[in-house]
Image 1 (cartoon, rainbow, N blue to C red):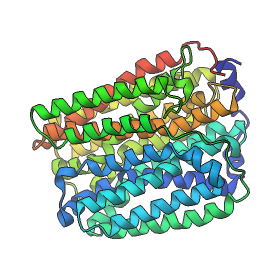
Image 2: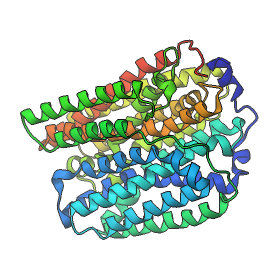
Image 3: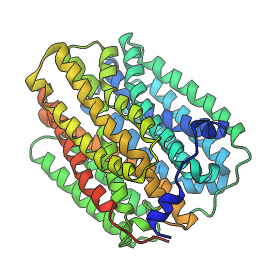
Image 4: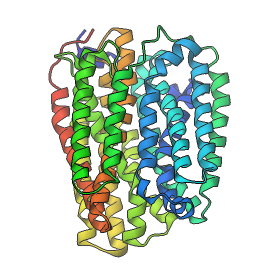
Length: 468
């Protein structure tokens, strides 16, 4: 079966949101887990000015996000092992449990070092929750609901990155950052109880593959090198970036030959478009990294209060979540292709415009224009993501390989966001102490990544052969 035929087979014509809602508990757990992961990627970004003022650690500003995302990538690699050994319900309980523990460590943190520890544990739990959602979707839902389910999960990322900075800003307004962590822990605990009940009847996964230790070590080292580049100066910055590039190339080389890999085997097969689909997903998802820094920019450049700055940080997710809903309603293959190709271009153009706002406007008008351009960039993510994800899930008619490809969607997002979060820290620090310059560096860098997504998506749309 060709990829095109498989995509047509998974058409959601005739399916409705009500049909998806009929799956009740499992859908709530899957969506809730992804929402928690997404909220907490950037919740801390709005709280950081208050956190730094309380416990210090300004130098490690970007590390709070990078640590969270790196551990999310590590956790995503353990999803199949947990499903095989504990079943769906047990794996979810472990994920929610780790998330609660990490969040409570963060709430009690007396120093930045302890906060980073908590963020690591929290990220591990969040990575499990997000990975589980994509891994079990194929077995829990019929094919006709995949596009809507993927749109829902993508929408949870958008809503989460909208709610994270906004909710964080609300707590930061009253210097109540520890309370924000406690409330998040309570929400995770409640979802853990729901998961134990709603998924109790789900079967265990298949045989677990070995953990790809070599690949994970190289990938983690690459992200760590980029993170270190954000706190060093002079020649050391260039040296650590070069080291990171070498480690990424080593990761790719290792993956091609290893028996146990981070990405699905089909990613490295000639003639299969999966690598290009993943690269495009990563390129558009990386744009959300701007939310980790925009609240700081809003406070420093626009003089915004923390709560309002949190909403500015969430602007890109407004476009993402809104467009995502409409994109899921599209049934025409031609229109889907237009959305898939146009998405990365819109992301790049929105960020390119936002990069120069502080140089051409000031005050409230600058913040308004900035927010609108970030909404435009977010709409590019929402337009393309659900249809790219369905293409990734449809590269093979082998259920095992297709399942791996589905799980790889979340892995791709986590790798892209962790890498760009670390690189974003470098771009911002290079521009400091000139905050407008730092903001321009970050958004120009992300715009370039979005533009590269246009190239990769065109490769992804070339007529491929099946990976079966």
